[in-house]
Length: 292
Ligand code: ADP
Ligand code: MG
Image (tube, rainbow, N blue to C red):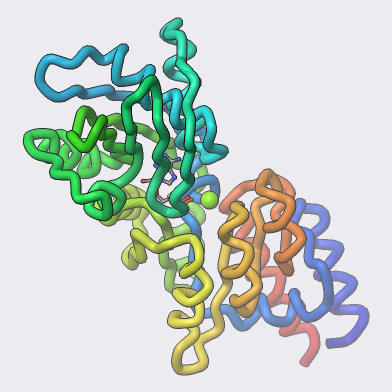
């Protein structure tokens, strides 16, 4: 690349809050064929909020929430924070938890007041050998409407389902459309469950969904997208996106994201606006065109 073209591209980016860390980042952006986007915090606002609390027969919502919040208070997961906030907003006093165990990509387990409380996705309940029973229909209904469905079990018995919603960012649809206009395939990559991910992907116009991916497996999924020499950009915000950002030909971090994501990425979107993804790729293309 000519130094002038690089300087112009970098400057254009800076004006839009698109930070290219080096010349290579600009040049590789020009060649991208596939954009893999993390769901939570990238395509969505990353501000999950509890919308539904459904309990099995008899049990009170408040009592279930107290137990679940007790476990989640020990977790740093954004979903956990949403549940704790909801319990506190309802004025519930949340008891102490003991023997807390975080299960990445699954949920959390702890003892609360002599009860063993399991909170997480279906995979976690499967792992613990717990049947969802009549709550399964509620779980499916929440997932099919784009909610993240968290299930809770107390002493080995499914006790409730909590629905959590995280609204898409205002410009996510426009970003996907703009990427398609550039001839780029858009893929959603998430640890969330398949039905939830598919519902949100459909809303956003994304055709390919890779869901229920464990935190440690995101980089491998990016590598799969790179098959046949395809050039892949990964866009993410989370700690567990960092290896995938490093694996991608271009790693793009959301500016509001975690420090590790920002440090690992080749490009940082200071405005945290998904529309700046197509902008970055367009600037890259413009730079390379000037080089010839
Ligand atoms: P993401 O790619 O959406 O950031 P994670 O790997 O962090 O996904 O989590 C994947 C899924 O695991 C979540 O959608 C949720 O179902 C479950 N999960 C993880 N941590 C927790 C937790 N602390 N409480 C409840 N569920 C959890
Ligand atoms: Mg995320």
